[in-house]
Length: 147
Image (tube, rainbow, N blue to C red):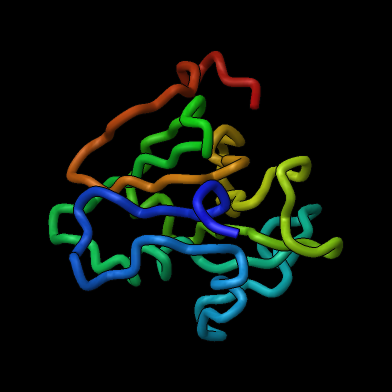
């Protein structure tokens, strides 16, 4: 596996950082970075994953990286969010049935505990681009969202 089933981090990142992840890589994350029971943080949702802030840290972000553009694997969906708003965000890669497959929102799916905007919960997450300001955002205006 590789290529399409990777989560990639681009943009304002250091050359010595890690910029590509496969699902199995997330199970090898340190215990402090892992979320073994998503339902403890996002009631009604099952799965396991890692904190997005750990993945971002592993990419060695630059000083000006204050935003993340989160894109689906096919590029059809994008959301630009402040990194500060993603402090508790979780990248889920597996659930009770095993590795998260496309039919269940995989191979990577982002959840933001307590988010008022369900549009921030991104299925099929494939690319994260770090930068100093917002980039692509395909979400409808806040007052028109029905995610």
